[in-house]
Length: 277
Picture (cartoon, helix red, strand yellow):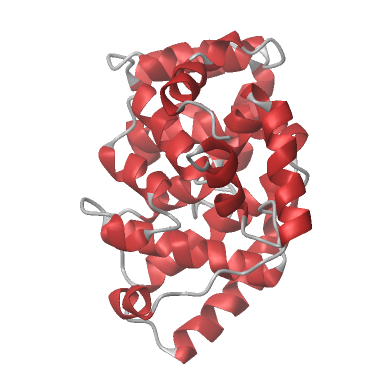
């Protein structure tokens, strides 16, 4: 029997009541939920925490953002990346512990998606590849909140995956009536993220449904498939979804492009191993 969807949404919105999430994460959530938070305020908050400062600088100098070894200060990172990317980055570096505890290999999978999404975005000349990378990093955040909020029910999801050999989003749908993409989109709305990020999270398994940002969503969808195919981390099941021909046509990539993307993935994912924090 599926749970009541409105009740699930209400529980998800109360993410800051989870006793196991760190105090720093709770403070970050307050910043994210305040639409008036400025780059200056976010910068001051990061600089108060040496560990957070270190993680932010580590991430912005990684292959995910394309500034390897060039950013030496938080203020420099803020100016180069802008408010939306920094807010997503801040969430990413603060949620990694929850990701590691929630599902073995999920952080590695998310990093792989971020790196690969950026590679694809650059290949097709997307203007803001950093925003696509953030979407790749956060695309599966709904899994974390479902596991943390509903651990017993999520055990049933895992059982279904193992016993019936189905995709994780199908198993979630059967147990919850929603899947992690829905849960992630609810969180992104609660945290006042831009519609482009909300839609990419919500439709990364159904990219043809995206109206506002179909290209970014298609990129993260393809990145997810490529990372699964390469066996980077774990998305919670052992299957590789098929890529719809219409998505392939939208991205307009050739077989040669895919080969080049795989080669770049190999190099940059090796460089990203230091981000297994």
